[in-house]
Image (cartoon, rainbow, N blue to C red; front, side, top):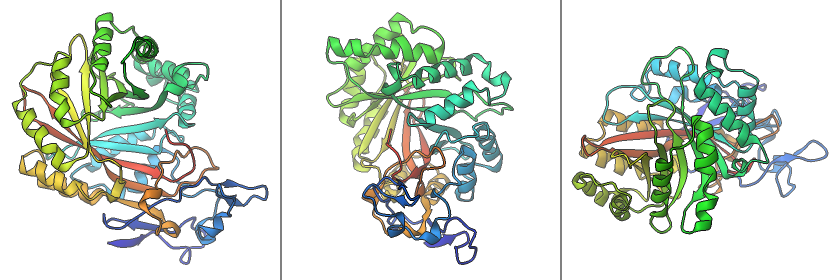
Length: 434
């Protein structure tokens, strides 16, 4: 079903935009694949020097920016609140998440999401925020350096470490300035809190493989600089050795692209996230790095994955040995955001295998949709481009709600758990992707 959300410009001439709310997977939405900027006369143009009026109706643009009202994490939450099913996030849980978001009162993120257990009736989700190296990094540094967070928070050891990492990340002379493409802050809301909780931090690196001595030397910035900055201590040599060994053993075409420091948990190890690993490669790879646990249930589910998903990402905790609990992230390539139609079949499969309750499946599918300026509603999906919205001069064209991925958590000592990660992302063509 397609319906107008909010007042139209005809109803309210002071309104900045007309919005169209899309809540059906068959409705196609895309974003014009150009960069918008002002010309010398103050007119907004795209990168082929066409005035923006030739693409977007002037009635929808009452400012230099599109979707300018989405500037802080709390703004995004307020916009999507009406779409969040109670089965995923209760009112109390929403207030907890809003409490976290309100600490960040500037444009630090245009991409966030939630984590919910699909087999649980609990309406509680964790909250995740992505921060790009493209200007959002500097906004984060400003918050941290200017002590815009309360003193009792910013002076804590973990937040000091996050500040030190961000300073180094923002330093153009540092190796991590260009090597780290983004950060994920993962806030655990499983327990009540009054202040900003300590997040788990994942940094998105350019893909890492180690197939030569030179590549091993080039990798050293991660164990020698990035991880110590985040954790506040040197990485133990035996863990560094295990980490390097785990990367050397990667299957062809696979690479590590995220490294995690689980700051909110008692963990000495490092989380690594491996992209482009095939289900049939997974068990042989695990055995090659010393993971020797029961695989019968794991084999069963891996044999089924190819029927339902086209992308598998492996999560491992690397300590003195590889932790027995692993995560298998499932999604689709290429990403169609809210237009992906294959989630229903995968969720049906998870429900059939008692990994997802019907209420959570229905709630996830209901969450999917988009809000966007109605003047671009006829553009096609292949014109999508994630955009980073920082500052008053940028234009972003759509806010999409979609399923980012579903992660299967396998522990040989327990039953498999399925977790869903609904995402919300601002799309457009205003800046470089990270």
